[in-house]
Length: 246
Length: 246
Image (cartoon, rainbow over the protein chains, first blue to last red):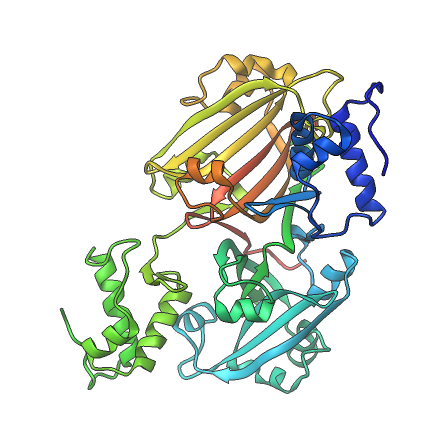
């Protein structure tokens, strides 16, 4: 392994950063791999712990490394980035992030609506709700547990095989409906036993809980969703850029 | 305490929901208070555990109650709602949510920039960075730990008392600068010892980590932020509503 050059005009902390970045790029350090401790790096490269700390702190701030309390410092795999302003299908989201999308439908049933279903979907008296639960995978790793609730009168979608088709395509073709406006909420949640087992993570792992109420082009509620996203795998971005002066 | 009426046309689960909502409204059940177990409610009201479970599940889904793994079910205090599309000052955010804003500046210093500071703020060679760290409170409860980084050339803001003034007001008055475009990222994080102690929560509690890069009206970077928001206290909403057909 290469050393650092104390005579260089490049500061030592920067040399150490560059070296770690290079090892990640070359695959010598792999995603989720633990890196040596401050003490070990300090001895190996004959630099102060202060210098090591500075390099590691910056790599953590740049989301290249992640500190786990009491466990050490690990190589962080880049998170899948979902653009809030141009939300897209899970399939496209994966493709844009260089991942292979997959998934499995866990539930696809007509059921009694909750009061929230009745209120948000403006259900008719005695109308049931279609509940679709899917786990979504990126490169075969579960990243999202998705619950969709549709008004029962759209029950023709119950005949479709959702693993391979796009739901919105079906709604467009069978009912001439498409999504337009929405309200969404993003908050933090901790997963329960069931969610943890489906997502392949530990109980109480932190999740993003995303609720949406989607309207069709006639401003009628089309469906609502409650999605649980693995906090270690997905993040959101939003932006307002290149606007002209108002 | 009132009972349920098995002869009513209102389903029993709905009667139990209404009763719990009434007790919360009247202050008999207080925020963060534990409610009786399924078993206890079932015995008290002489209804099946299935009926109790349905009522509680709906109240959890409606964010009135929160289940904590292995601990029970608790009355959930409504979270502070931040509108992503109309982001506002913390002071206004609190006011809109009926809370009294407060806070304390923990750090307000000129320091060496990180590589991220240099890159994102487009710093000149040898230009330092102004680092402001504030804890923000709502009704005297810490809800956010905010880090702001400004280019060092805006150093006149270092003379201000930030506890009582709005930073953007100072930037407008002293430099004629105001915020315009932005890029923001929202993800989940777990708090470390320091963050936990400042926010008054347990180590590893889930947080929303929000990074922003804010541009001024001339499209120059104005500042960047890294904010840690208590996941149990704040949530985001975003919407697209009442748009006309395109």
